Length: 249
Image 1 (cartoon, rainbow, N blue to C red):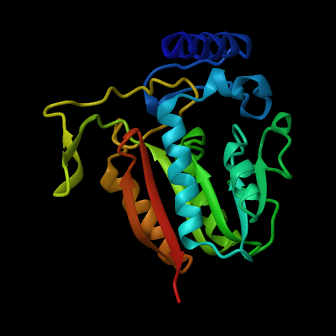
Image 2 (image 1 turned 180 degrees about the horizontal axis):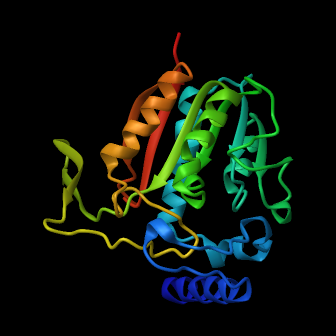
């Protein structure tokens, strides 16, 4: 059942990109895209078509990160609505939640791009931006980060795709040891072009090393009076790399 669902998802995505005539030419640095991020149909995000166990685990981390730093009075904004699952859970738990997306088909509260958000300074206490920034040209990353930090009053939580493959281990000894471990695959180097046709760049792919990405994130955060308090890769889905920023006191 799982393989069938994943195959259906891949088939739908390939047919959609054929329809919008998305083109990729040359290396990751000189790609020419005809991107339709603002017109992806809502049907692509149907649960059985879009969500697998790995994505489900990442949604869990999104929720727990928000809950770990949120008060009931905090306002929460999700940039990039996607499936809408995160918002449904957050609202069910009694928090104030709104969404922003460039795609009106997803029915967000606010329509706009992350690099030019139609919102005032400090409009929301906590902003979540999960698997969104890689859809922009890398040259717009600084602008997008600046906008997130400008609109956030308390914290910003970001996740980005990390192309570096690793092996996950879970050590369990009853009543003694419970530990999750990552081991990098030696000599593995991701290809320059992204596997996902909609990604413009990814961590550890081409020239965009984790050191470079982390440096850019911290530089913009510091300039906006935020600091990086933790980062980690989702053990169940190591493709997703989380970064959590808090506003400086």
